[in-house]
Structures are given as structure tokens and as C-alpha cells.
Image (cartoon, rainbow, N blue to C red; front, side):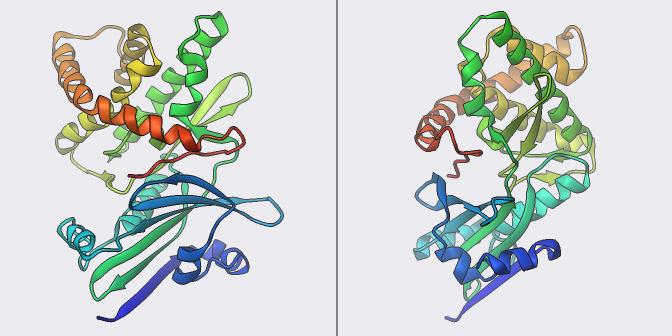
Length: 291
């Protein structure tokens, strides 16, 4: 079978990536980067810094070295359709067009053998001074000092508003774990958030069709929540998300549905977070784990 490479670069970044030696599929797949941010059996994430340190990029690469992996991808829709990297690139673009703070997609590429994806990647621009929410909030999760409590509440309140804005815009992430949310500090101990790893995210026009995906998003957010937050903190997040002061009986039933789904995700997600901490160096602006 013949091998084909395809790469798409946003125009404002074309010259920048060419000068950095990141303008072909081969160069991106072989690039060592300046730091390893994450690794799994089928993917890795590296950080690349421009020489003048003005901008950094993250390159997420997916590898399917064996035919059984490529056949699995076929059944997930990659045959004749978008690879995982291309899907994430498109989802991030759509999020930003809807006014949702996703990380900025810069480029994506695919290497195929015939019609089967062998490797693919997405390049995103790093968010300065940002880190994974799952790592950041651990500094405030176990202490009860007034400042730590206030910071934790501000984080959860701001996050709830931003997740609500995303869902009200019609977009569902469908992989909304804490490790896929970046947090950046603003003056006055305020915070903003950026979403990443949205390869299965999509915009759904009809609200009735979004409902189950919204439950899945909130269940993912709740999977690790007991590890970081008290029950009052979790309730405060939910009340802010729903925009109410007290849950109705119908909302209580809906919450139990969310909690049931969260509990099924919890053990695996906590294990992913534990493994991800291996790569959490203090000087690194972002940590992402892809599985």
C-alpha cells in the first residue's frame, strides 16, 4: 500500500512553523521537542519553544504502529473520514467560533497507509502561565485556611459559569475531565479556563439532543471532584452551573443520574491523574495526558 502525508497549517502560523522546522508531517512526527508533557502507549505530547521564547506550542501525536490498531480506528470512523487529530482541530476551531475558550489550534497532520491512519498529530498554541486544573487545585484541596477556601470557591464558581456558557452555546465536550481543563490566574485571585482534548466534542443544535452529552460532561467533571473538593464545594459548583439557589426535586433526580455516571468513571480517572503527575514539573506551563 502507498503512504500519503497531509498537513494543514493556519495561515498566520505557516511561516513560524516553517522556520521552526515543523512544516511537514515527517518533521513533526520526528521532532524531539523541548519537553515531554505526556505519554501513553499510543500517544505523546511534547512542548516546543520558539528560539526567542515568545511562543510555545504543544504537539500531540497519535501512533498506530500495528494493523490491529489501524483497524480499530477504521471502526471508529477514521477510514475515509477525519483522524482523531483532525477531529480535535475542527472541534477546537468550532469552540472558538462559538466564543468558548478552547486552546488555539495551529495545525494538524495525518499519515495514512492506503486509507488507514498510521499516525496523526495536532499542534496547539500554549496558553501562557496555564496549568492543568487537576494539578493546580491540589494546592488548595486539603487546606482549610480562609484564603484557600476562598480560592477554591472562586475556581469552582468561575468554572461552573464557563461550563454553563459552553453548554448554552450548544457545544458538548464529551471528555470534560479536570485534566482536560487548563487554568490561568488573573489579577485579584480570579481565574480563567481553557478547554482542550476535544476530539469527540461537537456542536448540537437541538437542546433535547444535548441533554445526555451534558450529563456525560458533568459526570466527567464529577469523577475526580471528591478528590479535590468537599461536598458543599461540589454543590456550590452545581448550583452555580444551574443558576439556582436550591435544587428542585426534578433536579435532585437529575443529579443522581449524574452522580451514578461519575462513580463509574472515578477509579479509572484517579489512576490516570496519578500517572499524569509523573510529568508534572513545576516549571512546565501545561500538563496533558492522552490515553
